[in-house]
Amino acid sequence: MMESQLWNWILPLLISSLLISIVAFYGFFFKPKRNSIRHDRTVSTVTSDVGSVNITGDTVADVIVVGAGVAGSALAYTLGKDKRRVHVIERDLSEPDRIVGELLQPGGYLKLLELGIEDCVEEIDAQRVYGYALFKDGKRIRLAYPLEKFHEDVSGRSFHNGRFIQRMREKAASLPNVQLEQGTVVSLLEENGTIKGVRYKNKAGEEQTAFAALTIVCDGCFSNLRRSLCNPQVEVPSCFVGLVLENCNLPYANHGHVVLADPSPILMYPISSTEVRCLVDVPGQKVPSIANGEMKNYLKTVVAPQMPHEVYDSFIAAIDKGNIKSMPNRSMPASPYPTPGALLMGDAFNMRHPLTGGGMTVALADIVVLRNLLRPLRDLSDGASLCKYLESFYTLRKPVAATINTLANALYQVFCSSKNEARNEMREACFDYLGLGGMCTSGPVSLLSGLNPRPLTLVCHFFAVAIYGVIRLLIPFPSPKRIWLGAKLISGASGIIFPIIKAEGVRQMFFPATVPAYYRAPPVKGETKCS
Image (cartoon, rainbow, N blue to C red):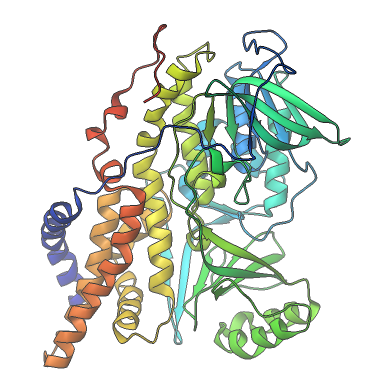
């Protein structure tokens, strides 16, 4: 108790000193953006066989949305509700069967409320989530979301991803000005440097073209269109192996569970009243073969002994039943090319490690930002001036998105075991820091939940964990070996978070008000330059 009170007293002093040093050292980093469209096979030039594109005609949509996942469906409904004509083209309109995108943080639920689509988590047996439980070496701590200031309906939600998406699609399709069509987009259509629409194959396999003033690409993590609209720097740090545990009683009901296992974390959360999703993280891009039984052996011999005893039997039963799935965990900072007539959203635009379940929160927050920017505009036909105006989207979204991205990628690295002694000390310090209570618990959990996604708060708590780890090493007797280990701990912590922040963009993340695009006003007739 005394240690917790002392730590809560000295933390504000640590925060102020950290801010000064971090800002001074890294404040000069920011990356300029490319402006030109990158030409490759995903961009087609509009030629005479298509003719001159009249995007103000009655037969043309205001917006084309490529993809009807969480981001695409929510965006289509949001723009349709604002009386825009929206044409959604989705590769497969059947119910998806995925092992991620199943946990919506409370911050994401608040965005559902703001967009008026909170009813999409109803009638799908979604489960409320009130916090997390962490497990490490036989120890366990419970971390509650700080929901005291919110309405009782506000909490996290977990569900089958496919059921949630189908509800979103139905919601979007219920609007008369939203057309939902199954088809595969082959390429974007360009004319004089402006994206005018898309070329796609419909359900019957016939090649079609569709035109709109604005094309928004939301075709997911495997997007084949993003290369022409951004500089994709995709990393695959690990893979998730997914199972469904049936009739499993988790140690803490209505909580996500994270096991700090060796070599990397295990995640569990309810997805229905009778099912629990278990995601086993496997570092690297290759996983043991599911087909020849290597995966079953790995799960039983390496993973199962590290599971909480309450779920062990259900875990073994799920392995024996089979139906084991895997998918790569991708990370990609947003690095767009401002392009007249086109915009990227969702996982096609920006990804982070799914450990913290922040992806849907980022996507929904982006939709709120874009909706607010487009609302004053009735005519989207001037692609160049609209492009210049929407550069503010990239700046306005950054503090929230970059905080969630940085937390996810940094926390994953901290939670993985390592042969590096300093890295393991950081891991142990993080677990114990979160169990101190007070602001040491509520601060990080408010970041994780998306309720307080502030970059400075994230950086301060991250280095507070590192300093806490150093203090633990130096007490009671600071030997030279322990001092050296403490120095390596601080160095290792810096090596984790600073590259992530640099990739996100320091200036936009911490000082968005210094970016000229932050103050962009709606376009005025006659503006024609996209900078």
